Image (cartoon, rainbow, N blue to C red; front, side, top):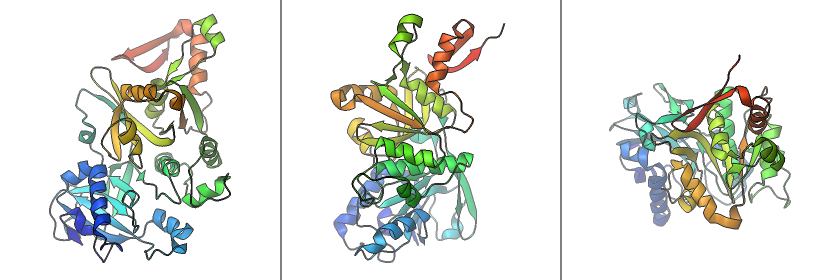
Length: 377
């Protein structure tokens, strides 16, 4: 089906709750808030019923056992920059990516996944900005052709089987699987790895930090955990006093991961987001590319738009955490690592400052530490 208004995709043929006007209106508003950049570029949508592994698994785990009269298929909505009459008009130039819609009576959790084409303009990037944004190649198979483009594997929680922590782990693992051929993770596998504390896995009340580490460990993702106090990684007092080694700003940890093309799970108060890019502006300001499956983090803490992804200033993150006071004493970052990764950043930082201080030259560009060179004499 081809349509020009995103509201028209919620029809009887596809969406089971099409006749609940308030629900459909709420979903449409939510879609505009989260995917507004791509919707503004769109002149028509191609809509189809689609078998999606993610939803089919959730359906098997939970929804097939409920009273919902729903399908085990999703609605796949392709965004197109030109008006088309049928799918044969879709090509590499007018294709903007797709989202999938779960057949659920939910405003916020109805989106399953988004594979939208990456544009620098969606983050207000200009030529003078230094950027590092990590994506994967997405391949979409249509009846008449296959289209490949750069995107990020965004996944949304359903709110019952998966919540924010599950969604961010699934995003991380999908990226690592596609980028570096790490082990693929499914929702059912993730649930099997977790020892629940309340005796039930569904409905899910979220994951503890220890449970997130456990999942990634069992997937052989070698998770490296960092605990930040007021957004610095503390160095032991002895090293500070005797050798003058200062605490490590969280910026250096995040940027090191992103430059290594490794995504970061960032835990803040009771929420989790994923960071997989940064922008260094001409004035030296740093902005992080954040993916938020519910938009809760960006809306409530950073007063940003409810986009599925946004660039948030490092200074804004710092200011928001400072304003939390006792509720935000600690923040955590979980970063997957490669098998032959022998030094964590903190240990390497201490080693360089403790043993090799006299032969280390730190090269800074626009005020940001980009790399460390060992000068051999």
